[in-house]
Length: 103
Image: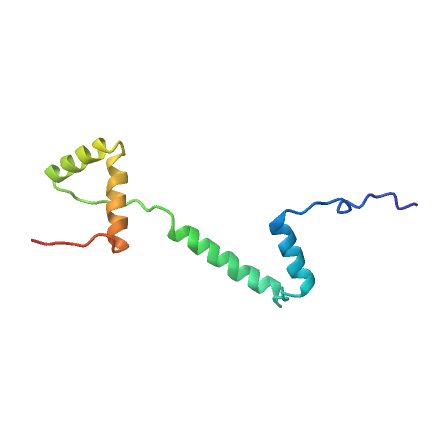
């Protein structure tokens, strides 16, 4: 049986990023991570937790009718759903971009 298989990498052209990775591998910059399966599981777990933390969670919230009407008006003026507006306000508050002022 003859070896008539073509080398798929023979005329391969790498872009700049791919070439940089190839050069780093050849120069020994990348090191063996050791126990691949354990590291893979750790990374998969981290990704799963990241996705879970960045997933929206529905909540129930009691809001004064007058306040809700005002929020809906502001949302309509900005062409966004009022739930989105409330989410943005809560997000900004959670990230300390907005401060709570109690009068």
